[in-house]
Image (spheres, rainbow, N blue to C red):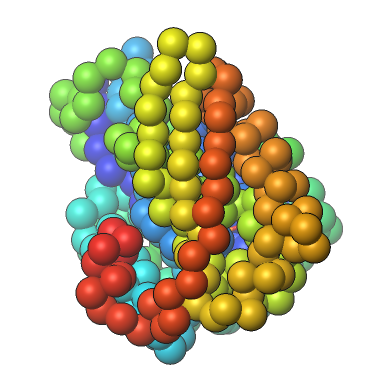
Length: 288
Ligand code: GDP
Ligand code: MG
């Protein structure tokens, strides 16, 4: 029996969430083409006949401009410290030197597999160059080329992880896909829709807080607050005659119903709390 912690690390858009989804075969992390969607540490638990892997997807390296960002950076460091294996994921067509600097700065103490992602959009020469480049780096135990999107190389990656994982009993009973509370996932599903529906700074200034989660006989009743920083953002989120928020509610509800496997009644409220990003107390209140 093998069992342990594996953390996925990489710059925004390298494909961490997509990889986690490919590994888990379930929609666990939020995937978006805009950076910084994954503010939290999201864990998935993959249990096989003779192994258990606990994955976490960490936010990428960003400038700690706001207190929120500092918290994210702490999450990155924290999650790498308690891992058994690190997965360092790089976009094959991205800036390899930049990725290398980020990986080096982690000063890893655990074995690292460098994953070269998005091979579906690279030619053989580019791929070979990337492989050679990373194999020279001291932190790199192994290089594996994958396409997280097309689910290519996932099996090989899984085998490599298992090779590096310590012997041990499972940490979690049953086949729980995740140890995160359902409320959190629901708030992330709503936040994902905000990313798709609104432009510019809105997604970055919005946080979602699930206030009520009640399982009823025929459906689940969910009430959530969308918290914004400025009064002017409220009008944008609501839209003309409430058109946008209605759309948001419909789309988020569909995904939540798929996730929960139950009918959902979703109620959304828009609230304004100026400068919550810089307020340490509120950060704590929202669980960052
Ligand atoms: P994260 O920020 O590291 O979590 O990256 P995401 O998983 O959100 O992926 C960022 C973008 O890259 C998304 O648009 C993905 O669809 C895309 N992507 C991820 N993996 C692949 C891949 O293997 N091939 C291609 N072509 N695109 C990918
Ligand atoms: Mg992500």
